[in-house]
Structure formats: C-alpha cells, structure tokens
Length: 316
Image (cartoon, rainbow, N blue to C red; front, side, top):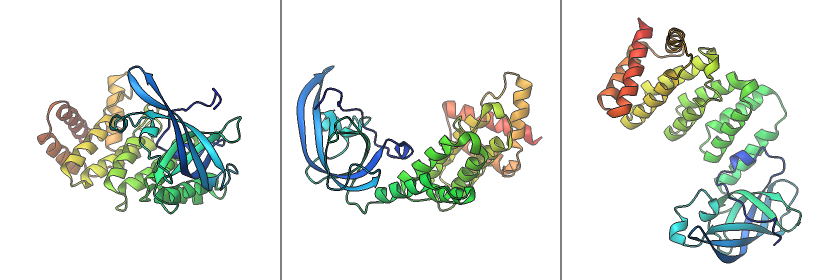
C-alpha cells in the first residue's frame, strides 16, 4: 500500500458524515485482513489493511456492489487492551471473515483503496442502523418545502433509532444560524414528547444548552426563554430521582451562566428567563428544586441552591 494511504483514526459515529459530499456510504463484508506488528510509545499495534467486498451502496456511485476494496486500518494488538481504547473505532469492530460494517469512506488515488472515516458494525443489511442511514440521506437531500423538512427532522428526533437522532442533531447544529428558532422548537417538542426515551431527552437537552442554541449574547430572547422553559418543564415532569437531579444541573448551568458582566443586567436577564411564558408554575419548580437540594451534596447542592434562589427572586 502506498505511503500516503495510511490508516486514520476511525469514528464510531456515522451521523456527521452524511452531509459530507466526498463520502460514500456502503455496506461492506470482511474478506480478509493483513497486519504487521509495530510498537508505538510502549503499546503494541497492528498496522495493515482490511479487504472488504461491497455488499450494497447506501450513498455514492462508487464503490459499487461486488467491488473488492482495501481499507487501511490500525488497532491495538492485544484484544483485552483493545476494548478499552474505543476512541479509535478500529479497536471496537469485529473483523473476522463475513463480518459486516456500514462504512463511511473516501476515495484515494488508487481506485481499489478507500479510506474509512467512520464505521458501524451490523448483523445484516436489515439492521436498524442501515434504515437510519437511508432515512438520514432522505432528509439531507430533500429539496421540498421547509415545513415538510421540519416534519421529517421532528420524526428523526423522536425515532427509536439512535443514529437517526444523532443525524438530526447534527443537521440542526449545522443550520442553527438561519434556523435557530425552528431548531429550538423541534428540540423542545422532542424533549417533552412522551414517545422520546429518557436517555434521548437528556442527550437533546445537552445539545439544546450548547452554545449553538443557548446563545449568551441573545440574553433573554424568545429562543433562550424557550430553552429554559423546556428544561424546567422536563425537570418537574421527571419522576426518577437521579434523572431529576441531572435535569436540575442542566437547568442551573443554563440559568446561572454569565449573561452579562454587569451584575444588575445579568440578574434582569435571569429574571426574564425564569419568568418566561414557557415555564411551569414557579411554586412547582421551587418545590422540585427543594427536593433535589435535600438529596444533594457538595457542588451539586450549592449549584441547585443558587438556582432555587434565582427562581424565587424572579417570582417576587
């Protein structure tokens, strides 16, 4: 293999690569592997390549079904150490004969050699991740009306397919500047939907409170108000004690951030956020926060106590 075709770190998340025009997405079956041993900083590695036969193309005109391609790969040599080093997903996937992967790959100067950017192990072409990739490309390439696209994204967020959820978050993040209000509304709906699994709701909340959507410079604008209202509603709706504490921390980090270097202005912004129309009744929020404080210790207790004081002050 040419020196320029060396293995790159492999991602285990296909979602961000759906939008990249130079990526082909394929279902590939392992034919064989070729490894040589190398020691790097005291760690023994296997450096080489994996030969795949393309079973199906999910996106891109090449490689085609039936093609045999070679993909540079590297992994930790020891299987027991390998499983603890999943930042390079080559350490996580099984590469025995006939094992199947979804590969996001790029061409090289050699038509037989492709570089893998991301992969996902699958049991068969009927796996849920295959369905998710197909639906993600449908959304990415949809050129119809904006309301219909938003409907498709809403369905992706509330899907049981984790990969499709992550794609929808990636899409909303990439289009946040012109479509921030719509994105916040979609995440609001997904978080408060009874159809959305609890762990997905928390993932959406972490995305919603990132700097892409919760914009410090926008102060108490409608989108920021909706974000706080969404978190507060999710908090009071949560029955699980541990998850309720997590919602309280997320809400606290959002309300208590430094919106302004001027203490008086910062206080006014927080008051506007905690009095926003989307919030549940203040007495209900105060009650739940008090329960969380009673079961908390250390930094968490201090943070939630500050949040409760801010909420009580705004209600006066």
